Every structure is written in C-alpha cells, then in structure tokens.
Image 1 (cartoon, rainbow, N blue to C red):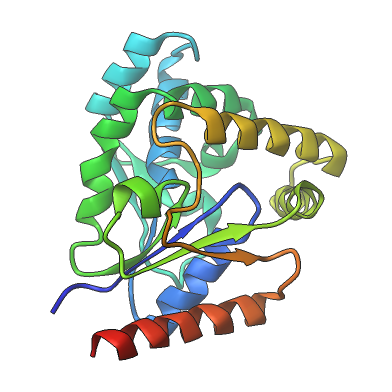
Image 2 (image 1 turned 60 degrees about the vertical axis):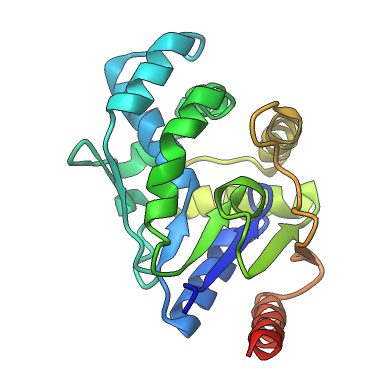
Length: 229
C-alpha cells in the first residue's frame, strides 16, 4: 500500500502545527515539521557565529549539520523539538534574534536541496507533513494537500501569545509587521515559494475554529480514501 502522506502548508501563525498534531494523533502517523530542519541549521549557524549574508558558509553549514527532529505528535515542547549535532536546540530554535539567519538560509536553493532528502526520509512510511512547500516541492504526490490561511492580525496575535507563553516579550503590532514581511519574502523567493499547490484545499483558520478545521480535514481525508478504495 502507498504510505499515507498529508501535507499542511501555509504562512506563520496559520495553525499548521496545531492541525498537524491533531491529524497525526488521530490517524496514528508521525508529524514531520519540515521547518524544523531549517531552524536546526539556523541554530548551528548561530552557534558558529555565521553571518546571515555569508551564503557560502550557510550552505556549508547545512551540508555539515545533522538535524534530528521529534516526530511524535504527542510531544509538544517546542524547545525540545530538535537535536542539532547531537545537542538539544533549546530556546534558540525559536529565538527571534535568529530570524535574519533563518530568512537568509531558507531562501538559498542549495540549502533547500540539502535538506530535502532528510525531510522525505521521515515520511517513507507515511506522515503528516507541515511547512511552506510540502505540497508543492517536498511531497508533490501527497494524497491530500491542505493550505491554511488567516489574516495577518489573527496570526500576529497567535504568535505573540505563543511567545508570551514561552516567557518572551512580544507585541502583536510588531509581530504583524514581521509576519507580513516574512509572508512577502517566502511568497516571492525564487526557490520553492510559499503558495498553495494547484490541488490543495484552502482552509481559513481565522474563520473556522480548531475543531471545525480538524473535522473538515478528516472529512476530506475520508473522501480521498473512499475514492481510492
């Protein structure tokens, strides 16, 4: 049988991880957060003191760094989601101070190519995969593709609340500016731009509640399985 792969893409704060965790738990599949691979390399680059504009060093860092991510959907500790060269990434994985490194690195085609096989390897037996290019690049043949959207205001409030929950200072207005800039950067980059796959189902999580989004996703999956026998 073909392994079950469901992709969930969308911008920051759209609810990808929340939906992914619920689907993975319900369907008994691993949760593959492809963005953690980029964040892991980001942590390695920060440890090495690599500047965001040092393209060659970032590519080399991606090639040398071993990133191991936690795929258990029942584990929700964001600070323990990845090992970087055998060391827990810790809070640095989500540190806003490392955002310039993450932005620069994720726009480099060579870095994205290096991480692609590692991302795919985790879904060989099936997975719920979340990210920004899962349905278009990483898993283009996934049986079900979802793309989540929500307004910048809603997503900024969610992100600020998440950061405050982790003990960090966060301002929703500032988050909105950062999220908008990241949206534009991710959507216009030449390498794997963030966009819905042609066959993706677009769900607005600013309008639909979490339970409704989960229910809709499971209904779509049931339709796929019924159609394929």
